[in-house]
Length: 149
Image 1 (cartoon, helix red, strand yellow):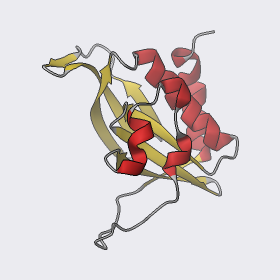
Image 2 (image 1 turned 30 degrees about the vertical axis):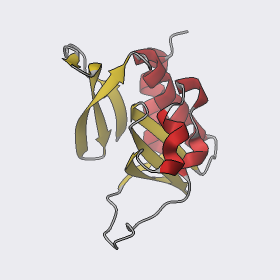
Image 3 (image 1 turned 90 degrees about the horizontal axis):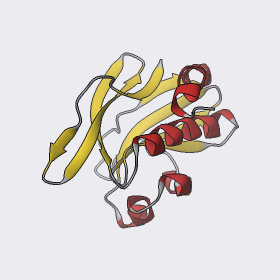
Image 4 (image 1 turned 45 degrees about the vertical axis):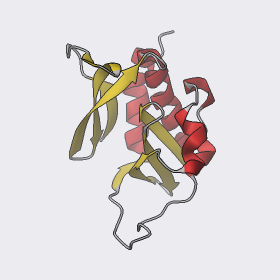
C-alpha cells in the first residue's frame, strides 16, 4: 500500500512559524503523520505534486520525490524493476538548496540523485518498499480527488 493524503476533519496546525495541514503517509504497514506548511505551497500544490511524483515513476523515470513539507522534507523514491524504494530526505545540504525554494510546478526532481543505503558514518538508511501497482492504485484512488476535472 502506498498513500499520501491530508487527514480529513483534522484542524489546521498553527504556531509562530505559520499554518500547516495534517497529513499521513502510508508505506505498507508503516504510517507517519506530518504537517505540511501552507502559504507558499497550497493544499492543491501538494496534492498535484504527489500525483505527478507517482506518475513519473509509472512512466519509467528512474527516480522521483513526494514533498511532504515544501522546502524541508521529501520522500525520495527510486524505481527498480516493478519495485519502488522509498527514503525520507531532509533538505539540509547545500546541494538541496534549489529544492528549498522551488515552486510546486517546478519540482527539481533531478536533485533526488542516486540512492545511498548508508550514511557517511556507515549507518544504514531506513527504506520502505512499494510496487508500481501500489502507485497505480494510489493514482487511480486519489488522482481525480486531487486534480479535479
